[in-house]
Image (tube, rainbow, N blue to C red; front, side):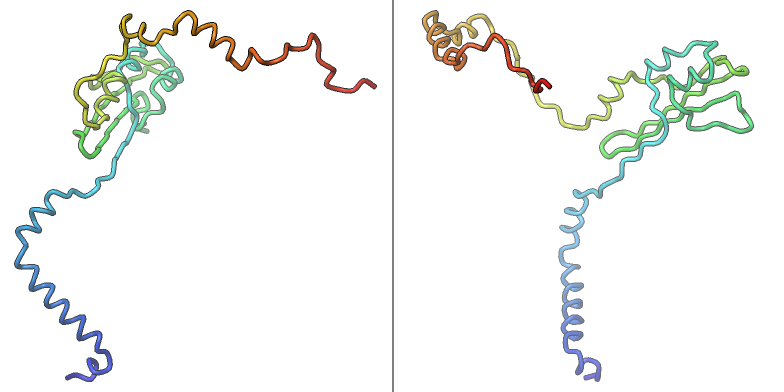
Length: 187
């Protein structure tokens, strides 16, 4: 037996356990692979750029100033030094369970005024939010309205209204005074 194992017996125990563990792995690799394929690692949600909605694009009109375009769309993601008459709005999102999305919009200027824009068809804000919702939809939505017959079941009887008014806490309170004393003392 080597001298190191005589001084540290736990090292021998660890080596034996590792050998047995590796030998046991070969026996159930198929089951392990099947179980591991069902488990997916967490993928980080990546959102980059400016989301531009159909409503924002509809608000753009030729002849708007750069400031007006910036107020509607926000600051552009890409502003090219060599093409100062062009702003590029790019939006990408990658989420687990949702197809990746990528949209482009380019705004062209003639001097300080917007000349035109072109790009992908943008979704409305409502459509975009619907694509982000990955929760499973439950079946039928229950009706939240009561019929007249159902409401009559809970209506109090005429005698009950008089009893309820007599039993209310405000019925036993003394009347309010006509005037209140001043908050601050007079000098």
